[in-house]
Length: 279
Ligand SMILES: Nc1ncnc2c1ncn2[C@@H]1O[C@H](COP(=O)(O)OP(=O)(O)OP(=O)(O)O)[C@@H](O)[C@H]1O
Ligand SMILES: [Mg+2]
Picture 1 (spheres, rainbow, N blue to C red):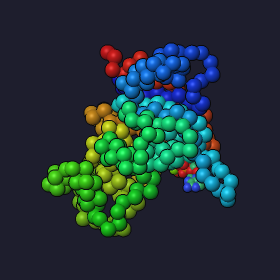
Picture 2: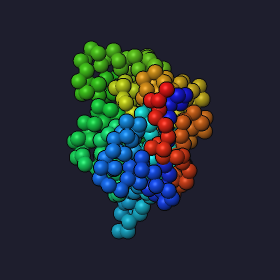
Picture 3: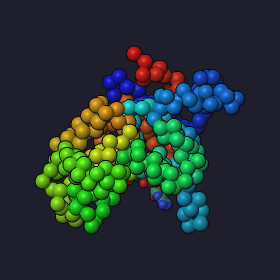
Picture 4: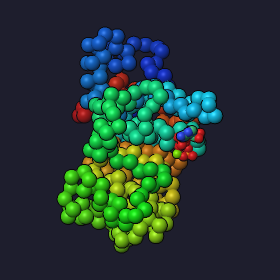
């Protein structure tokens, strides 16, 4: 994004060559580590180090994510790309604290997720995170309006404010006249847009979206992309998007490319870049 910096490091952390005392990865004393972590916290909304995820498959461990490290600046925009099955959804779930890694750490807006229990992570998500699932995950027994409104009420908004905000965001995704429909009465693309309205309505500091334009035609997709960029630009919402859409990935400040669970392409670590807050 213009004027903003999103950056990431690829592969094993720390990198083998060179030692930068400003970087938490290269710090050797506890004080250096704390100082470097504090500098990173100012810059970064999201830091992941050596994330690994393994499942037991037929009694044997199957590693689907291997030592993934990345950083995203506050207000940054990272696109995660790669072929089907390479681990994109798995990575997003770990970054958002929906799932726990087998190894490695995630620091989200200064909170180390590995030190937090499930309830604490849920609270943090309710406060700071929006998530658009690849499978939408709408509640079948609630209308489109209620799917957006109820989470707002659970976050403390009054019923009146939540209803108004839900109407506003459904209108922004082009579904102003579908609020009374249940998910089963909506097309796949319409359900996806309800899921996007739900994630946006809570004004998250960071938005994770798994193929947010995957089920949309070109015109509707462009409208959703414009909404994403508007949030990023006007509200400073940090974006982490999984996408197969080359145009959408091309708009991101940084692109993380995965293959077989490992990073095959990324940029320099954020701690080596000037502050995005600097004039
Ligand atoms: N609960 C699970 N148990 C075992 N294997 C799993 C589990 N969840 C995911 N996997 C495996 O992990 C790998 C990565 O899955 P993931 O859903 O992250 O891929 P993806 O990159 O999002 O793919 P797509 O582009 O098709 O959505 C896949 O091989 C998948 O079969
Ligand atoms: Mg996926």
